[in-house]
Length: 183
Image (cartoon, rainbow, N blue to C red; front, side):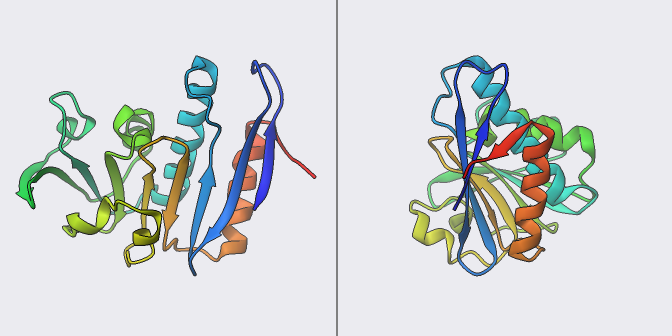
């Protein structure tokens, strides 16, 4: 786990930890200070940059569980499906563009784990996309990005990159936001 510290105009120092999760996944632990507006903004931007890094110009399936009437999924062509007592809003995206990914990354559903982005179109394994435990994330075979319901962890599962490349890419994001690696 590599701790990163954010220094700058924030009201406090924030640590971000990156750890390998399973064979081909990464977990990024974000600060637990979401009540501070500036920290919330930093978290949204970090999530958005990870989404851009993972899914830019790629086909993906956007899935929202039990969507609210104003959820982001209604902004795109969608299907509303019911399975296992839950409703799912499904958006098949042929190619994720910058503006769509920014909207998704900044949506409250993303940071609360109510929305996931899965690589490839037409992915409908809903029961697996919103697991109840961290251990059940390891059973997912598709590449996907999801946040924990407490908004403190981002999981990039089965990434299409080696772990060392993931670390470099996440460190690029850290450099952009003037994050420093803590010793």
